[in-house]
Image 1 (cartoon, helix red, strand yellow):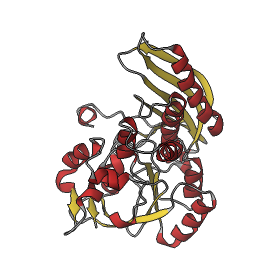
Image 2 (image 1 turned 120 degrees about the horizontal axis):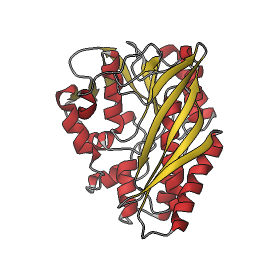
Image 3 (image 1 turned 180 degrees about the vertical axis):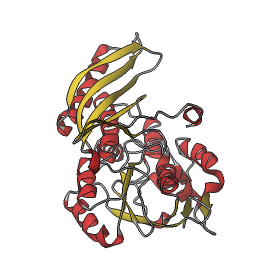
Length: 321
């Protein structure tokens, strides 16, 4: 973000969403009734199983399109690969990514690979959307309620998986959660008339919630006790197992983050820690939240929890209560 801040802003009549609010994807109009949603995401393995790593990385990249209200259409693979590693592992990673592309109904059109000192994999994804149907991260309004569609805690869980500090059952459940597409959640959000939406990834839930609040020039009151937590994640934080993302997020936010007296510091850490392929944060009018939650539960999204409310701006961007 600091590097982007020093660059000149791109201005073009067909650039419908750019970098001004650090949204999930860029959107470019190509016709009166069609726009392209464009995004790219890749990272090193966060789990040991290569097939599941491929699935998680692909789901994470596809999520940016869903977070804008779009439909993934095509993708290009991105690979960094050490020369000494077996190509059988790479084939498993690519197969995992293809699993999620098939599920999303998106076309793999090619890709690019380079030699690297560590494994990296991800996708550059192009989606389709009508210019009048775009949902950005900056459209929340006073009184909107915030809904979260996956439990948080993947930062400490992923760290614990690498250190063999969780059972195989917990690790498997975490991989399945991270690999779950946000397609159903996005469809429910659009049907409910969501005003704003973003997905929860490397900046942590609080970091992405802050972008929503600042983009709308509002304050978000976030209820820590209402956040759905993945099994064992809070216990791991209490034991000191975190990914390191929490410290960076807290440092970045500074005075923009308000903490209510007596708040649980470990829950704050968990809410600020990095997530991988997290759920959607959906800002919806209060009179539609019950219908949205019911639809999410019908679709069996990993979570469907009301976690906060947007109010008129009063100093801090996000207040944790």
